[in-house]
Length: 296
Image (spheres, one colour):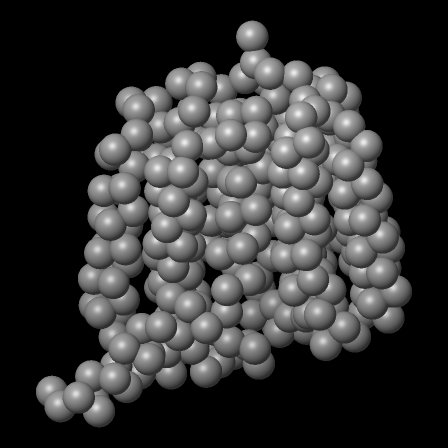
């Protein structure tokens, strides 16, 4: 294989892993960083942060390949996905299985340097990533399952630092589940017509005309849970200013999605990167100025 052919092949693998679309990696990364900063009282070990950041990239990439392996027949009939490498046949399923395996093993290699509980949790994380694509066949709101899969860096983060998962980790994961239902419903609103035609289940279809209301309610529950966590940890004004800023972005999303325009809904989905980042900046800044109650 000459260099040009190799470069073309690598580009196809890059598209299969969605490296050209980092939004998914960021939506996985932000909740993980929330957990690492809360669990460590704002001072996580740099090595652990790098392990989780790189592991998030690798597992999100593996998850995308697994998703396309499960959905390649459906993707060919959906406007947004019909040009994906597996749907077009430009990458074989054998190649995709090999790529997913390599990415998963590389991620597992990183986790092996952490404690036993975190290693054990990594198996559950893999199971969630591998089974999520199948939930769109039978769950009315598969976005809830996605919230667990995308937020599993939260219990793993607490485990890596504290060697246990406190109740706060559970509440933070619950907040992430409601956030994921909100943003992935916006995403599903883009594909609603195609999904109805091919028989895929999504929250946008299940909720029908209440989809916009459900998105805003889920945003509200996310904010409420994060506010309770802030009260429990004694976080200060900067943290709550972050929640207020995120609420402003969420309010803007109502204006974007209420007309159910495809492009506007997709824009709202992508802007959730900023919501996750704002939450993190609030946590980071509040600990940086010396607030928050340390673990005892």
